[in-house]
View 1 (cartoon, rainbow, N blue to C red):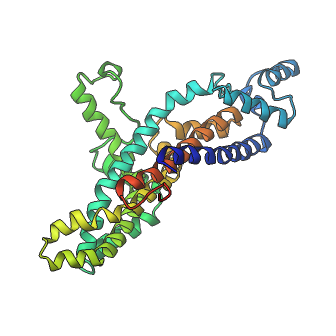
View 2 (view 1 turned 45 degrees about the vertical axis):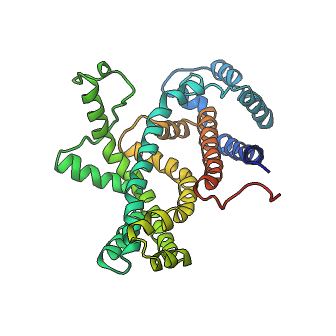
View 3 (view 1 turned 30 degrees about the horizontal axis):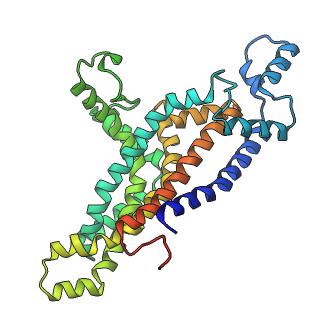
Length: 333
């Protein structure tokens, strides 16, 4: 089975997973307490005729199974439905909000990888020394501390007490500088974008950093004890070359797994981090959809996150073959 066939096979395997996600989410969104029409008309004078017309418009007067089949039929045609609360297409709402979330998640992963891999290598190379002990304590604290609590602490220290960084919002680097008052050029736009991104990036990326660092340390210790490393040392190969060429590459397979499987954790953490830092992204949109019982919007956001997670896992599997040539997806001829 070649790589292309394997990819198609994994994509086909993802179909029942996504169907299961859609069924569970649809039932939870529709069988929960509260009425989306009542929430939409809250504080307004309305008649029974108006309520019935809105229910007919959004199909809320039909049986649950019919509504689900209608939703899935529209989904296959690329229609995510109409938001009951916002009265806008769900796809438009997601397109408006997905940029900040992707910026936050990708920057958090970049921060996690850029810090965790060097720290893990140093800790493994200096095993049981003070540097190793400090890195293990830092990893334990990072794994044990919720991202939203880290965000609150960062705001209190760097925004409230020191006043170095802003405490809320994001500056989007893809927008023109004229979109923001007080920003005159692209360099200033990028600078302000980084300043606004630093605290939420660290809050969301700390858990990923701690997890990756622990795995990197363990795998590097195992690699450095391998027979090929002992042979390289016997031939007088410099220690830096052994770390870079012999031990490092083999130790990265579990890291790829962690990065791919932790995508769901990062997306879930983004919901809390966006709430703490008042970032107008997918996380806040999802919270608002739940609060308003907007099942169409809940379904749209959940299905998108499910697709992103499944694609991330598939990309993780395929990346194995590029990192380690010993990994193959085909039968031996």
